[in-house]
Length: 220
Ligand code: PRT
Ligand code: MG
Image 1 (spheres, rainbow, N blue to C red):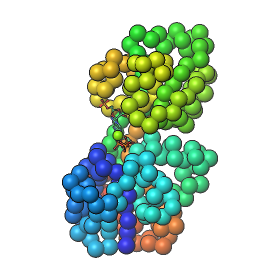
Image 2: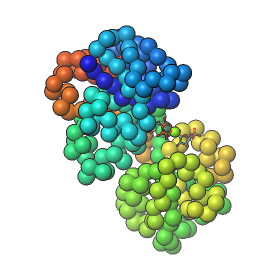
Image 3: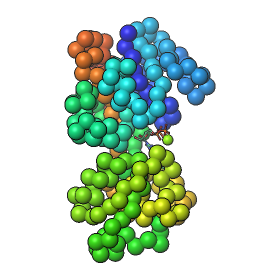
Image 4: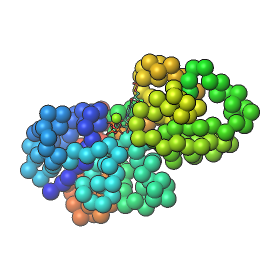
């Protein structure tokens, strides 16, 4: 059996065409079904529906052989393992180029970020991406207090919880709707295929087949 961990929503939707290219059709719609293990047209392939942030954990511990996860999530997970995905027993063979966005610093439109940085002020920064944020501001030499949040980061500057946020931005509509502006582009994000290193050895042929089919599909 080959088990693939996916999160609902954009990653699931954007993975379906890649699965199809590998000859795999998922037989249930995770938005409609309450099942957490979805069968596919291939009796030897199944899909687990997990929280986006849990995908690397499932793959690391062998609950799934493969998974698809955002670079954001992967970097934060790797940071818990000394910054290396290899140390977490993960192998990252492919950038799938799906669920693209960027990770940015944003502030209230009336906050003078440039002056605050220039003056060497200590910034309060709210984020789910504590490792990415810590590394970014350390490299810039900006002193920050990081405030860990699990969602709706955009709210923090509006209620005085933080001066700035580090969050994912795609269209920019969420920032705009909350009167926030992007002041730094930290990095581009896309989703990656991750594979359990031990599974790759034990189930080499079927896993390679999936990796190769995904690679061929994204090269088109
Ligand atoms: O929702 P849950 O807490 O379970 O987990 P999650 O939010 O991590 O999952 P999900 O499915 O929302 O996101 C999974 C992955 O999709 C992320 O890890 C990213 O790699 C990728 N992705 C791509 C995005 C976005 N684009 C995105 N725009 N993830 C989140 N957003 C959010 C962003 O956080 C912000 O709140 O959308 C909002 C901004 O969108 P715009 O278009 O208004 O700029
Ligand atoms: Mg979400």
